[in-house]
Length: 348
Ligand code: FA5
Image 1 (tube, rainbow, N blue to C red):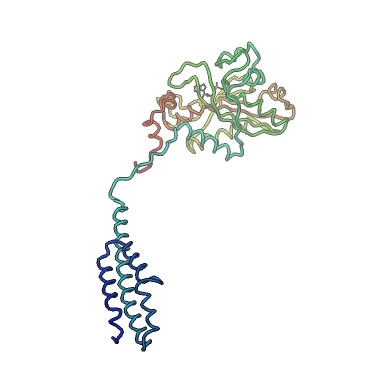
Image 2: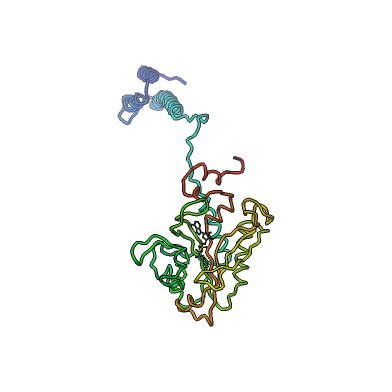
């Protein structure tokens, strides 16, 4: 409702409303608010005139009406600018979801390591713990404490690289046996030790000068050859197939007595005979035997009380059988195509 005081505010009100219309950026609106509506702003101070007027109520109403109009218009315009700024920001930050993403290549596992882990898992499941041993070791651990004295002909089969007269790259993981026995101080043992081994062997499809073995060693009272056979049979069934069979062929290792070579029934022909098993139906995977009494004695175990078995599995050979790999050298060539073959997803 209009009253006689409206004209006092009309001129300044129109001026401010025009300034608001003309404002191009948010900062201009802020300046208008400060200049006219702050405590000592040009519009606010008009209220002081109330002291001089007769009808203070009508004056106040008139002032409030004009102020409300200005404030409403100012807030609307501020909201418009803020909306516009937000839209601009959203536009500039828009993500085009149709663009192709950046692929993160993930590492792939060499089948050697897959099989190494599987072997470890199988034996851990049977209660074995995993030990480590030095790759550079002394003659004493690699040979002497395994009942292979100097000049023993068995050394010829495991010739390797010597660092000096005493230190050498271990030619088999059996070298950890005496280390573990020393640490156990006459207590029962049930360990496996996976690791690198080195020999002077010429490289061909099934031999490498550097390869890996998993040593197994169990020492306790009443351990017998039947325990060894049951353990290795379970290993073969878990690693190859539930129908896998194993057989023991008598062999010779200076540190085991009796000693055996262990064959697994051919996974390709199920024992009938094929090119993979060279017609025999069997494939050799490891050497094993009952720990020789001399080895027990040298490491502080009384062979009258304790007995034990040991085995040494060639990891690459098991991986070759498991995946039908024809050449051992493929494991070491870092050919990504070879590695990817063993990491394909079902839908690939
Ligand atoms: C030994 O090394 C014994 N230390 C195994 C052993 C342990 C016997 C405990 C008794 C008790 P042998 O030399 O046969 O045995 O090797 C064991 C396995 O290592 C072989 O069956 C084969 O799988 C693998 N192997 C041997 N030489 C090579 C090579 N040059 N390249 C790849 N794998 C090999």
